[in-house]
Structures are given as C-alpha cells and as structure tokens.
Length: 327
Image (cartoon, rainbow, N blue to C red; front, side, top):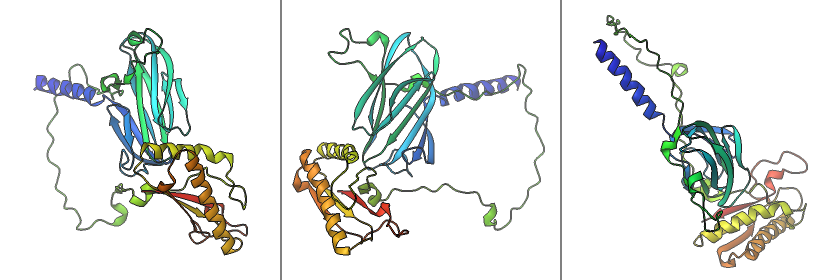
C-alpha cells in the first residue's frame, strides 16, 4: 500500500509539471482590459483573426490580452525579441521592458534586446490590444547563436517562441517523506436533496456570449473628428483612416459604407447636409490613399439615428459621428 501511495504521489507531481507547460493568457473585452472574459493556457503567442475572435465572448475589433508565465533561455547571450502586431504590444522579460509600442499599428514589427543566461527561468509578461477590425499578435525571438553575420542585411532568424520554452510555476504538492496511506472512513449518511433549489442559492453560470454579425461588420471609430459645424477633418483623424485604408488594400474584395450622423441641435435639413458632407470627406480621404471609389459608399443620416438620447441643450457628442460598415 505504501509503495502504491508513493507511486500515485509521483504520478501526480509529474502530471502536474507537464500540465503547467505553456503560457497563461487572460482575455478581455475592451482595449484596456476593461472586462475579463476567459483564461486559458496557450502553447504559443501566435494569433490572427478577422471576424472570429480567439475566444468566445470578446469583440474581435476591440479586445485585449495579457499573457504571463516564465521563459526558459536555451543559451546565454543577447536575445532579440520581436513582435508582429496589429495593434499595440508591451513585453517584459525578467521585469525588464523589452518592447513598448502601445498604439494603433498595421501589422508592424517591433524589436528589443535583452541578455539572458542559459537554463535560467525569467518572468514573462506580454500585453496586447486590438483597436480596429482585424487582430494579429506573434511573439518571436532570435537566439544569440543564430544572429545574422551581417547584422540583418539579409533578413533575420527570428522564429515564434515554441511551447517548450514557456512554463507556469506549478503549485507545490506537499507530502511527507513517509506518507501515511489514506484511512478508510465510514460512508456519510445519504441526504435527500430538496426537489427545487431557491434561485438565490443556484450557482451563477458564465454566459457564452456570441459576437453578433453587426458588431463584427459595423463600428464607430473613436478618433475621426471634425471642426465644429463643418466637414473639415481634424489632423487626429488621419492615423485611424490610414489604418483603415491599409486594411482595405489587404482585403480588396471588401466594400465600405460610410455613414455620417449628427445630434438633433439645429435645423434637420442642415444636419442632413452636414452629415452627408462629412461622410463624403472621409470617402475622399480614402480615395486619396488608393482605395477605389467603386468600393466606397458615403451617405448622411443627419440626426435620425442617434446612439444615445439627447440629454443637454448643446446635444450629445456621441451622436456627432461617422460609422463604418464593412461587407
């Protein structure tokens, strides 16, 4: 019995060690970890998506992920870490910030270097967010022994970090040197459960939220702004529209509808004209960036489709907007 018990403990320890391989990913709805949705162990940090999110329950266009775990260095020297992202990324290795590019980017690569020692484990944290349409995140490294001889003139040897370099700190299993075999206990008296359970005592279940097609195809950009009562775009709008133009170039089969909206302050006819002019201003900008006019439709709706009920005498800024519908 004692040998059998020791064998069981050993099996549990080994199984636990293997179960802890990989890196823990925490998935959130929102671009700044606003709403926790799910946790899972990922073998690699290598994800990309267009309409289907990596986990159910998050908006694929506006989400964030945080990975934590430990990284095992296979050799000593200077490692080059790189991340291909759309949109923002932050990476810490051994609590040292290696990459910091927290902003909107269109499938861009960022790099950073750090010295590591062979067989040593380093705490790893990676934070990522997607702020518009498709998402992409790939974490790579280049080993010191594989660095290009000519300093990267002919490319790099960066590769996605494989699963066996990631690990989670296992929770200890406490057992004495001479464990005592389990003692049989008499069976407990069977208790008949009540026929019904009060609602207040029922366990809460996590809803399996599905993202609707409308959420995937239609979105309101946060940074497309105009001068007051005019159809002249502010300079802050260009970065997001450049991002959209690049996306449309990569997916030439898609079509775009630009909807212009205003609040209900002022004359309805003038609001309709203003919303139409703002939608066309966005269309003209995208055409200048190389998007065919045949792929874009622009239309104004004035104040007929408010997001929120007007609450102030000056209207509501959330209703003064443009929206994009991608098909």
